[in-house]
Image (tube, rainbow, N blue to C red):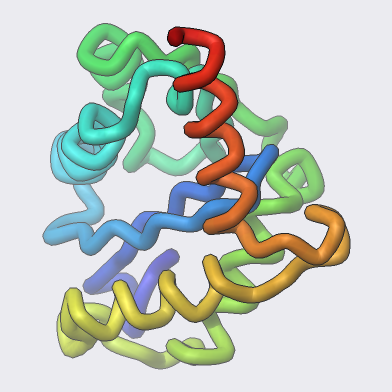
Length: 150
């Protein structure tokens, strides 16, 4: 998501299955900065939760091959001008805009505020999840994986 004057940005990663959201502060819109920020977050996640990502076609995604090599995640791209191919992410970005409307300078938004927004959205019951929250759905994924591993 791009801030006012295209001078600041935040990255959003939304798991399509659980709708679990992570908001990533990004220091620069340059591709190396974006992919490094995503890699740092993704490498903190268990491998079974990080399988694929679908990007839009922005220049900030130019280092996608490096991200794949670093994380083992297959990267896909939506077709140009086909935002519906990333519908879950686009919808979630719209929800974030309720807290951080257009015209917001993301450099002025604290990491704590981003985590607060993340927490609010990850604790909303969703019809698509059978009225479970994204946190609950994610925890069920983790528990199921742990049960299979045991």
